[in-house]
Length: 536
Image (tube, rainbow, N blue to C red; front, side):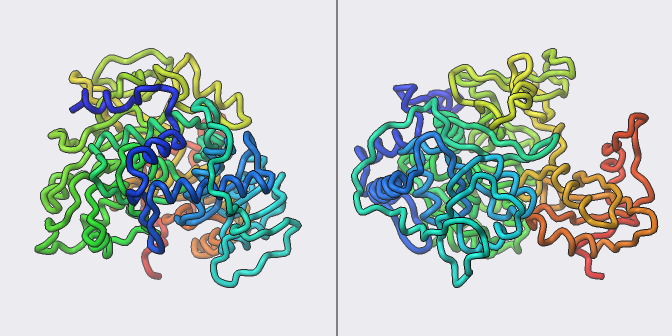
């Protein structure tokens, strides 16, 4: 099984690792086969190629050229997918934007990306009006959602339909797999979110590794289960992965635990990618006598559930997993059907593409069984991040001593299996989203009554983590946790809002004045902690 995954991770020609090359292969082998099934339409591989050609020609006519960045803030719809393909055909660097972002975080991405153009839903235009600076942004192409008006912004607005050219012939030029495919902003551990520079080959190997881990083939119907397409899991793990294998993709607008199985049955879904939190929601639904009567056969689940055996028995399917990140790709996989089901196991190294080792604090390799930092090194070009966008110092720090330092803790057992044990980074993982504690702290500290705060993770009943904050108020000031939440709601994404708020007279500090977050994390939810989800 392991050998099959390794053999499947490389095309015969190592330079042909891009969605452009894969789409051409599908045009030669199955142009009339459905590839993209959306609520409003179904596109074959041939349809997707022709429509993305029109999109690419329209982008070129609009002056969006190879090598420049393009912000994309759209829901899971056809425009987002076609812009992804069109960027690949033109050599334009796509910059996907989390549709929950607003305030300082959104402003930072717009400014840092240095993009002149943006594709955006009208539902998000009001967020641009909240920002003090839009950096280099000049023009927005808008997909209308309802009757949302344009805000009073000094930008040029055009309908996104203007980007659809009449000519469906391929634009000139072929993207090289060494060229930059995208800038993917990921939560930072020290300062603001950083833009991860990824190549075409990087995206290909992530997609192929995930699809191969659960044995996706051209007979499968692969379901996104509501994964947002601005993240690597949805766009690369499912859409790109299904194209590599010649499968069909069913794209959900959003996840619904109550409708999941009816969607699976209606579309004949045989494979899906589930975040651990999503799998947990399914597992917590009331048991039904027909739970096992479904076409779903294989699931990529990240991370694995603690009660995985119950999940597998209840729904009668095979589960695999993988370990990775936007920076490191997916260098470790556990195939579907493996008898190994420890919740911390992430699999074995894809040894044809990557080296992985466990390092101590001095970057010395630790013996098997010892917990340390997971580090990754590529064996072939361009399959891990190329660097951080305009952040050379952060790039050097990440790549010190010729290893990509993941910031995650784990160990390798005597059989070569890798285990993920914890996150060394100062980030919080909540329902599939990585949250920078420093970014949340930066917004909370803007409240006029707050003197300082510390944001940290606590365990969640839904797997992964919840956001907790300890707050010290300014002398003479008063604020209830509800006041803090009301202040934060218009300034940050919903998933970033702290669930737990603890008011304190002071934070534990080191002799040099740094907050000792590990002490707060160890205490966790205390009796004096306010819970946003408990009615007053």
